[in-house]
Amino acid sequence: MRLGKAPSSKHKTTKFLFVCVSILGAFLIVDLLWASSSSSSSSSAYRSIASNWPRQGSQTFVVPKGTGKQDKKDGVHERVLSATFADLPGPQLKWEKMAPAPVPRLDGAAIQIKDLLYVFAGYGTINDVHSHVDIYNFMDNTWGGRFDMPKEMAHSHLGMVTDGRYIYVVTGQYGPQCRGPTAHTFVLDTETKQWRDMPPLPVPRYAPATQLWRGRLHVMGGSKENRHTPALEHWSIAVKDGKALEKEWQTEIPIPRGGPHRACVVVNDRLYVIGGQEGDFMAKPGSPIFKCSRRNEVVYDDVYMLDDDMKWKVLPPMPKPDSHIEFAWVIVNNSIVIVGGTTDKHPVTKKMTLVGEILKFQLDTQKWSVVGKLPYRVKTTLVGFWNGMLYFTSGQRDKGPYDPTPRKVIGEMWRTKLSL
Ligand SMILES: *[C@@H]1O[C@H](CO)[C@@H](O)[C@H](O)[C@H]1NC(C)=O
Image (cartoon, rainbow, N blue to C red; front, side, top):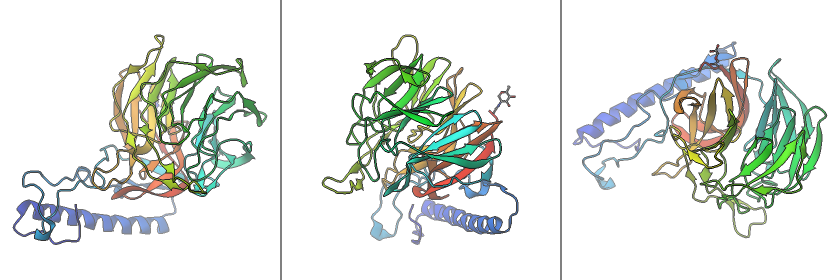
């Protein structure tokens, strides 16, 4: 919907909608005033962010069909979908802002082991990538323990998984902007902080789905070296206590749909691959800095599962397509909980649309639901769960309650009490 143009007085529907938008706009101004005054005057770290979100009902703000598209010269509004069209209704949660990470991170990786969240790599800016690990301690809610990654390790879009002590780090993008992936693979012993090499992947992959399952490290999907072309290949290698038990990766059943940025979860001896996309930004041909240029992306709501049959089964889809969620999930009480992400681009403006909900997949009933709203829409969050509290840090947040397109790369850490 276009704001700032007078509605046609002949058009009752349009006029009514204009009034609605004006009221919503007034609410937004009040919200902004409230938010700025509360952040400057509030001494408590706690604040409900409920009023940062557009009111219920504004989320699917579509001008009714029936009169067709009018010529702009008539001063009649085009029938356009609200920018926030993809938001889903869900409970408001009370969020607490914790200590921010030492650096902002986009497309980083995270692994929780007991009371520690290890946060790896990521872009600081598009021209600057991190090559170190920061650690958040859930016991005293502090950051610390920074240590370096190996020089040859990728800086973003990694595959990563732990057995509870060793962290396996597979392939990923090497360098800033839209450089391609490396096949290098490593293992970190979190007790000694020692890194070791692992057999490299047969070919480099960008943001592949990665998990440990039945004694084997599985890597599947992702994009090929150009960052954009979806890859279907699936490999595994036997591992134990941070060592590969085989010299080479073995070929496994290909995944029905390739592409990067999916959640890959093993729970109750089953392997799930959730959401993700086909396509991604690519390096501009000939650019010496591999400058990122946008390409078509399609985001999916797919859920695939492997069990004893070793054949991919298709499970009920997510409430909406969701990508950039590879480290944005936790398992709580027999449910997979997913925080934020990106969904389909806006059909008219073609802008990227971020996700502002926490989604839940209950494993016994195979039902999806919306657990609640985040403080803002955000992608590539790094998520942990400790003592009844859901934590998220890092990623890229939206421009504001009414603009779900990406803006600031953040290091903020937030938590909320989770009750499923
Ligand atoms: C998980 O289930 C237990 C037992 O029913 C319950 O006490 C606990 O609050 C649940 N945790 C969450 C986060 O919902």
